[in-house]
Length: 264
Image (tube, rainbow, N blue to C red; front, side):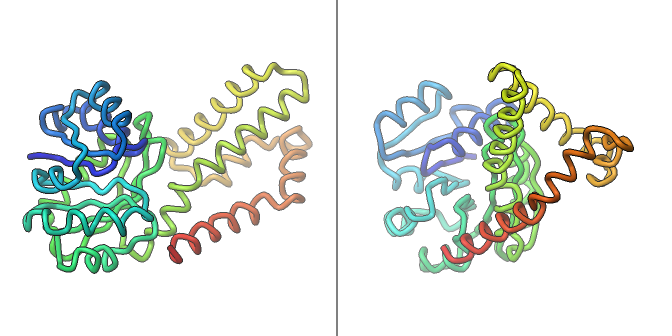
């Protein structure tokens, strides 16, 4: 089985790294293409895969073809490869805002198509991907796809109508989390911590809190209450965040991401 990547940016590299580390595929099983020679050389050296300057070659050889380019590049890339993709090939798109019907329209035909939204924590094996498929993708083919996607994190099949929400809640949200970590660290620096130490403490607290919720299965509100001792320091901070609209601010940010994705 030959896995082809059109586009070799950060997300493609995270996916390739996960597949290789979990031994789902070997370097000889993966091919890719990228616009710049620098990118091609970097990926070939790091992973030992075969790379091409020509997208058509990847499309011709791939049994599973992963479209790992930005959505604005589809208008250029798909016309270039649409007649080169094998009829039995499974095509996986990771582009935000491009529906399966839009992708099929660009190809000018029905094809076995999976749409997924991974996120940047995939780069450290902690990704989260929402996945949907069209009616031509069999259960067996979907199982192969999910095996690939879970090599760099968790993956869950969802209806396509939810993929914009998934893109906001897991795809865009790392940026929000990094902003939160930065703000926590700024507060620590203001209180006298060194910058390096504050970043380390803040990041570990966020990572540990997320793991605690996932592993215990407890509601986040219950876990928050466990930290808020009566008359203690934490509830004072919670009151400030409530007054400043933390919850509504985050909800509005998610809504803005969803609206933008649907309009792309």
